[in-house]
Length: 158
Image (cartoon, rainbow, N blue to C red; front, side):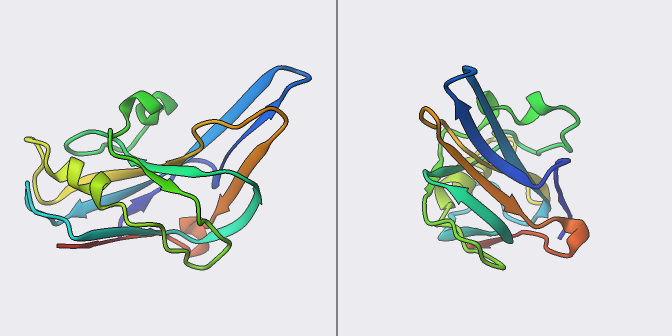
């Protein structure tokens, strides 16, 4: 249903204490034409991505880009951590599955539809990311791509 994705299907973080580097990535899912009225009460919301691979330990987080109508990102800074919703959900039970069901993200979706500028038919961008990892650790997941007919779903119940 009108999903756009960034150039890679990997999300993760790794830290190398010998080279003192910390690399991290996020994956976003943009859902277009979300038909929910401004201020509607969200009973539940889940993200159902296809998880193709998984390594490491630790949690991912799920947030949304905090805007009334999420545009198609054209640069990395548009989906940077400073643009995320305050509401975020820990994604600790991630597993390789097709499709995998996230924990309930209703607080994330509620924060978006409660915005004064939200209108039914606007777009929402969901972000899955790693907040941090410890020394010499990593956490990486691979998600299916739209081109592979494995588009994620956002299921919202009012």
